[in-house]
Length: 150
Image 1: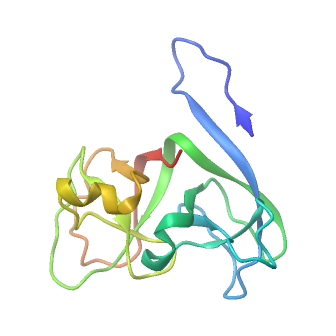
Image 2: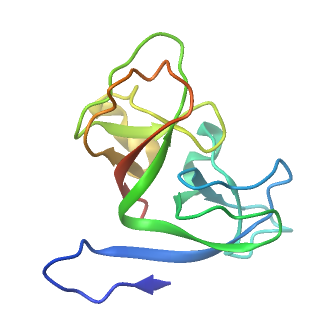
């Protein structure tokens, strides 16, 4: 883990290293990352793009592109400049402070969550910063967020 030295002007950020073992392709900047938790592959570093089904293994947001079988960093706590917003059926406006959860599209996030449902995400989520001018029905939009995955 890389834990930033505390100072007054920069936000606190905790990064950790992962290895992309996702057979579906690269883990691109802003996608959610899930640690692999199977008996044969659960080594604490192997990771795939996160999905709703992998909510329990959600462990951060990719800081930069990570090619297949390559190593890269993910933000586990703190400010992330890019968080991938998923296309969703309907139109949902994302505003500052909204809780973002994992969406259906691998690695993407959506704001369709109630305060009562935060515990179903194992208290691992992203807080939206700023606002997306468009709505979530526009595919592959990115915005900044605060990652809360530990």
